[in-house]
Image 1: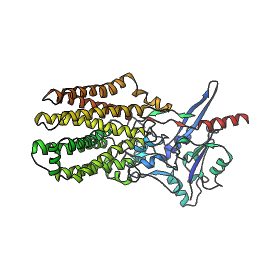
Image 2: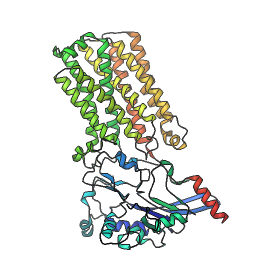
Image 3: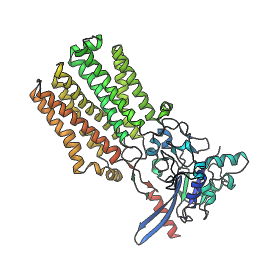
Image 4: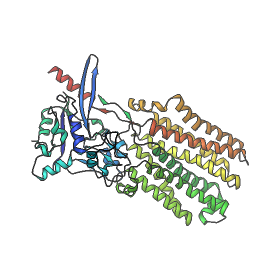
Length: 213
Length: 311
């Protein structure tokens, strides 16, 4: 069985936010909701300081705190490790949002436009009424992954079966693939580099690995 | 190394505070009233067991005892419907009893309401015992809800569970002082001393648990709860919410049962105890509800940097 995950090479990330915009465009997320975002961080102490860009989002944990607390089972983990939300079950209690230690989840209570004039026709067409009043988050572009697999494509290798953030990355800093497959690109990156995961002390066993130095 | 600094949670607002406060008041009231009623007052016990119907003095008071607690907890649940995005799907709350404390809290409330309601209609001691068990579980469940919210540093501590239990008893004692002293104006039923002593003890226990809750070696926890240690917060929580009512209850105990003064003093003390508990929960949920900072393991990060520099 596959276990989808990501490796992000922070040495290569230039903080261009292309992944952020690609995600917004693909998933039609409303204003102020970001399933993928890039943190702009200063590390170290003067004069030995560094500026780092860290792509953030749902970590698709093996031991997801959001899943345990969800009272409706709307949040569920697929056998391939992707943590997803069944919008039809979610009551929008936001318990998962306060349980997630990665700021990965959002909730909006009304359809909002990017413009002061109200929804413009493309926004109306692309609106997702099923996502109003429920928790939402990154799902590793699950429809693309599933559709790609159906057509015999390989996620992480074939762009059409790969999350849009990864496919759009201009510096080739983001990689997606099967963590269980030792030949996958992500497994190779993990084998060949020292990687870290966010807030590892919480024991969430995130599926997002970062190459720092 | 801290990548993203801790920030305040903004999704659980006043309705959550109302739910936690009213849940504590309702369950604490029910359990304490049950404890007081059983040993302290033979006529109540007889009335509860036999379902006697002297409507005002006994059945009415028994009805209050049985339903006020449920009503309070119910107000908390109703408040939550104003915060949830899709409250009409509330039935789904029962789908994750195996792991989610919010599911368990919901079940506990409905069992509490069902057993207390049945006991009101068909007085029977077993129903009362079941309602009490459900109320106690509900009190714990609300503490566990915060404890399992792992993203919030000030909630994700076992200390919050025990604090919630003592706060439930304290605010429940506050309501008990108000309700039963109010009833006593019309129909003296019991010794005012026992209510005052219970309120006093509950305030002391809660204050002790409050300070234990605030104790932590975790710098992030200390920083997030700083707002609860300010002079103003201390004055409101410790001074107005605990010390003042405790003093009033000592006065009430010194005065002994009386027709007017003692009940008034106890009612004021009860209201202050409720204020104290509500103020604490407001502080925990809204003022000190800080999400964890997102970190990279400092040791690992430094080692990688050193190695990279050496290379």
